[in-house]
Length: 616
Ligand SMILES: Cc1cc2nc3c(=O)[nH]c(=O)nc-3n(C[C@H](O)[C@H](O)[C@H](O)COP(=O)(O)OP(=O)(O)OC[C@H]3O[C@@H](n4cnc5c(N)ncnc54)[C@H](O)[C@@H]3O)c2cc1C
Image (cartoon, rainbow, N blue to C red; front, side, top):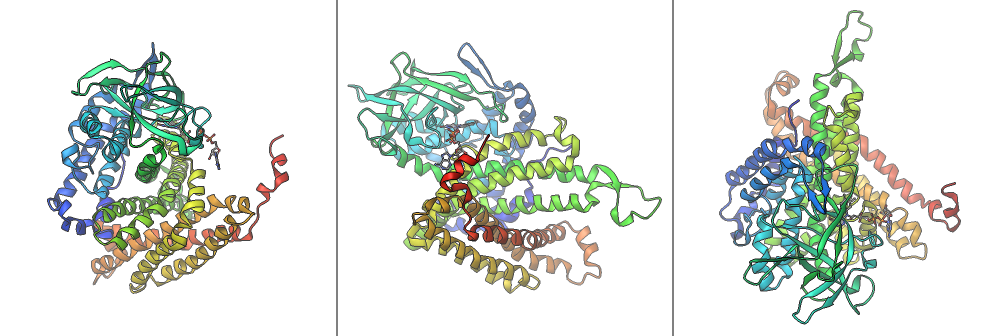
């Protein structure tokens, strides 16, 4: 079976036909870029992903991570490609070349990462964490910290991590107990234990810079008293040379369901009393610093989730064309009818169509959010900047949770298409499904995302950000309404937007009332509905771009179906109309049902006595 990650034609469609990212190249920051150079980046990432990273996917999973005598051992096939990950400057593509980046817009980096993250997330994570560490240093580090660490971590020569979680502090980060005491030389001594730390230790790089959340002795309880420290595995002297091994060690690794090539480490700091760190930014500002990183990190996890779905879908589509089983239902009464590829069966088609619509919609959604970052960064008008920032804030929990949950759903559907073979290790879908799940859990579980959407984002600027989102969607509807054939889709989405507005008002009021639990028991359904609406928006937008191009390609055709079958572009554009039609007419009525469920106001699960109803 051909190895599959992501559909290049579709990536180009979103970049150049839907979002028309060329407008960014007019900005001074990107003046050296043009469509050709942007496409070359994606082409090279595709080559790197398919040829060098993808072969590590199954192998890394089978070999897994080892832990012996306190040393973490990553899959041996990772070392070679990691060198090229660094040499190719893939780790911090969107950062300034002066600090080790390629100076690309986020949206192009996002497109390139489809092939890097999509090829093997367990491998890509080494770079993703380094990039995140670098970003915090760039934004909040002292000149010395930048001099010592920035280029090293942005390039990937040294790795980064993120140490938040403790046994008693998972979703509730404010409960952490790791402490820091100031030393006479201005450094801090840290003591504590962290768990579940991705890439917490390894020998892929010669040094690791750990950002650690901890509380300075005497600081306030809860999130207000949290600071962030840079704790190098090997101390780095002011001249950049490596010093002694720091007292931060991996005490074990997790045995887990998926991402077997990724070390998930328990970390002990200060067991010998000599774990040294440097304060990053101001004391007690650790959570604020983390929040600066959060939106990009959550977009990344959403992308991670949906890319597992993208790969699973492409494998399923190819398999469905090859696997012969059963006769065509339309020829059921024909005695000599022979077996057909399973793609001919309506229920297989239904599943493929759902996968396609979700994958296409989520690619547009994730690229759109990445593009908002670029628009925000390049906007000169303060109102425009605010508009983009608001949309990023509102959509971030949705992109993280919806794309990871739908990624899982797609893996499940793909496994169905493979039948029993899908459940075996002979095909990659079972691994994709195992690997995908974590995206729904870390970087804030999807339940926490839903609470963020309802509790913080819905009321942003007294609901103005929410209203802005509705205006953006309505603008697409207005454009699409003028295109022949799309009016019924527009009407359906427009009608649902009104119901969505009602739902927001209903839950918003409840969230402010003493009945707050009855609001938050519907937080996840509200996020889910939001995701469905965003999908419908993205798919309608795609259809509005595709329909005129399809019409031009079919101009004068005596047999449009034959022309579509014979012309790749026509088939591609036709696929956009079909995906939008499927989603808006089949999914939105279900979404309306979900809305009705929310508006019923039912809250049995959170009634005081209900706790006794669960379990034995
Ligand atoms: C493979 C892997 C890699 C990881 N990598 C890292 C890493 O690099 N760095 C790091 O710091 N952490 C990492 N984590 C930790 C991860 O971020 C946490 O597991 C996650 O935040 C959830 O915390 P928890 O496991 O303690 O679950 P809990 O917080 O105990 O949550 C259990 C359940 O209760 C729900 N819940 C909890 N509080 C609330 C609430 N207030 N309202 C509604 N529901 C709630 C949750 O949604 C969840 O369903 C990783 C975890 C794994 C498994």
